[in-house]
Amino acid sequence: QVQLVASGGGVVQPGRSLRLSCAASGFTFSSYGMHWVRQAPGKGLEWVAVIPYDGSITFYSDSVKGRFTISRDNSKDTLYLQMDSLGVEDTGVYYCARQSTTANFDYWGQGTLVTVSS
Amino acid sequence: DIVMTQSPLSLSVTPGQPASISCRSTRSLLHSNRKTYLQWYLQKAGQPPRLLIYDVSERFSGVPERFSGSGSGTDFTLKISRVEAEDVGVYYCLQTLHLPFTFGPGTKVTIK
Image (tube, rainbow over all chains, first blue to last red):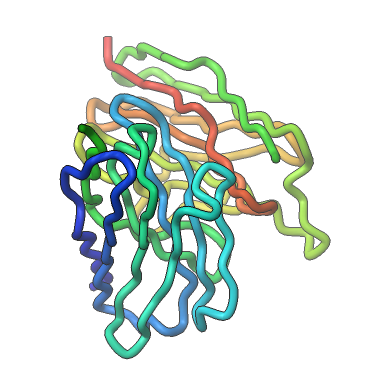
């Protein structure tokens, strides 16, 4: 079955960096676009970034553009999110999600918690 | 950016009764391919969201028939024909036509 396992979250000081990973299994990872979506504590969902199946292009929300980098390694069936210059506003649970052929997010990882605090 | 709004933001429903949630977008979500890129997700406490409805009205695999979606252009509705206790959580609409993709603020559904 399709599984997405996010990892790499933790507590980090403002201004520091963190890299999240999302290990995929149960499907042909290299055939699907992938997304990161985040959720601040007690808040709603916010789309963060997308990368197509081949990693040829990337798009970001304005709130993370220039600071976050989405990437993928299809040989390892893994999605990444490199987060630099972290601020307290980046605190939250980060979910990876698969984009289906009909442009919806059909499978989600369980999320990994990022806490930015001094 | 497309802004998504939902109403109501909270809803308390008696089991067995219907429920309806509205979602509106600031731009049409109709693509030139005649598909409309509007989905509904349910997030239960402590869990990731899960897909309920895509393309306005298509139920995702395993989603009970009591869930239905309708609408067009900029106005959409999610209906639950007879609410069950397991339907509690926060419902989000999402548009995936234009980047950045945007979610509605969420509608919290509770049971009376």
